[in-house]
Length: 172
Image (cartoon, rainbow, N blue to C red; front, side, top):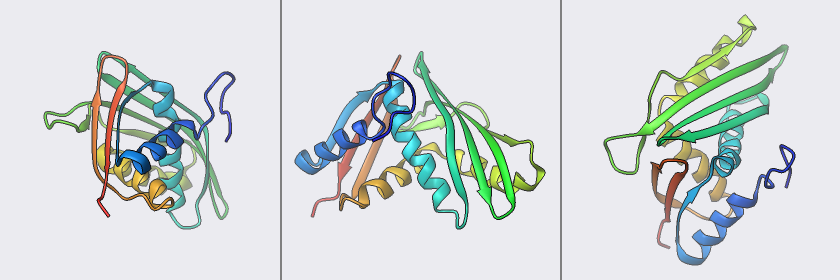
């Protein structure tokens, strides 16, 4: 467990809570604070980058704000592959979709870098951010698969200041 910022909750705590609920009850259904969303989004972003062969990345900063049932995620990443080193900035704004339990981007996902050689990484990041439901489902599925937990359903609903998360595991 690591602490990313002074006074923050250890990174793995919300993921451990979700894991315990999924193992015990087969479901998880709770509203998460912006800080808790930061915790699991950190894991998702790290997984997303790690699956891109040969890319090393670390999250320099990640912030989530949720206000009026709208979310904004901002991340700064340090990316390295072979001789290319770059800082990548990403911004994603979300709102509830007309489909229940799904989110949609409320503006075009933003990803940028000042290093021209890193432009392909930026485009990959932008494409990954365009479908937030698929990104989050894939990231959580990969994380929990390591614990032999297979997520079959996910619902995400932005509330005034929280994110409602509903997860169900595949019956064995």
